Image (cartoon, rainbow, N blue to C red):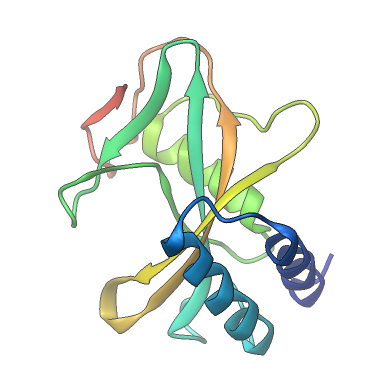
Amino acid sequence: MTPVEIVAQLCAHFAAATPCDERERESIEQFLVIAPTLEAPFDEYVNNTHITGSAIVVGKRGVVLHLHKRLNIWLQPGGHIEQGETPADGALREAREETGLNVRHPDNGPILVHLDVHPGPRGHTHLDVRYIVMADDVEPAPGANESQDVAWF
C-alpha cells in the first residue's frame, strides 16, 4: 500500500469515527484537511507536519506508559514512522523499542483507537494516530537509549 493509499484509508476511518472529546474532534478536522496535502506524510524531514504512530500497550496488568525524556510526563510509547512502515508498523516498533516488551497487534489486525494533533520538537506538528497493542504480563525492559522509567499502570 502506498503512503497516499494509507492516508486515504486513515481519512476514511476518521471521517466515520465518533470523537471521544472536543480535542479529538478538532484533531480529526485538522487531520482530514492536512493529511491528504502532505507530500511525504510520514517523513519528518520533508514536512514539518507529519503523521506519527503511538501504541496504547495493554495487558493483564493494565496499560504500559513511559516517562517521556523531553516532556517529563508519562505517555504511551510512540514516535516517527520509518521508511517503508505504515503507522501501525511504526507504533508497534516504537512500543517494542520504548518498552522492551514483545508487543503485537490483536489477532484481527491493527485497531486504530485515537487521534491527537499536537506540537512536536523543532516546530513540527504531529498527527499522531494511536493503536491498541497487546503485551504479555512481564516487566518492561526498555533499550539503553530509551527512557528507563517504564511501568504498568
